[in-house]
Length: 275
Ligand code: NAP
Image (cartoon, rainbow, N blue to C red; front, side):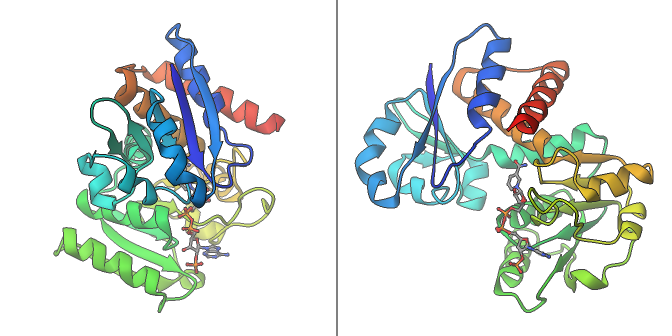
């Protein structure tokens, strides 16, 4: 089985490690390579990519790849963004970032259907805002610049899919606690700048649960704040592993129980700390 990750630049991606460990659990051997192509390479290399058994797609090609495949599944179409391609008679694009995120939250016993504080207004935040609104939750989007066009686009995307949804934009430095769940979709606290949190400790303490999309370090300062106050917290490695597991299901019908997912999350966290 031959897979790979298309992106640029790829650096020290965790994807080869995660996919190899997932397939090893099922007694399979997975050859997973990194395809760090520039945009000029993409046109000539797409035939080679489509001859693989399947491949992942990351920044900056999640939209660009759409022109090279036949169709999108419902989730990829919702965001016009593809992170998994299943090759074959028809080459189909999927978005397992979405399922990885939703499953990580649900598996922790948290719900997107309540009062949600969303930090950031980038790519991940856009997906989280829409998924929250689809789940019936209200979205308070905390951003650096309340007049940001990106924040306005997210509000418009939510309103288009869920006209009755509540969504507001507030300055991130003015946020006060009292939310069912907080979703961090900013890189604040990510390696190497690990000693900072996007919000004050009191905000984390007053939330019912925290989801932090950052996976390096294993535990951000925000996650430590949550832990200190007994607030359940899910970290980004869980989303990363669950989106990869979902890709394996799409490619080969491989399914993983919770013990297997947890094993790979622990292994991936340990591997990342060695790097
Ligand atoms: P992005 O598109 O670059 O968006 C980042 C957002 O964070 C922007 O809204 C940016 O604000 C905001 N931000 C940056 N620095 C900030 C600061 N100091 N204070 C407040 N806000 C700040 O990035 P993304 O792709 O959405 O990714 C966001 C995070 O999620 C990253 O840490 C990424 O690693 C993580 N992620 C994890 C997974 C996973 O599988 N675990 C998947 C996707 C993303 P401005 O708009 O003002 O610039």
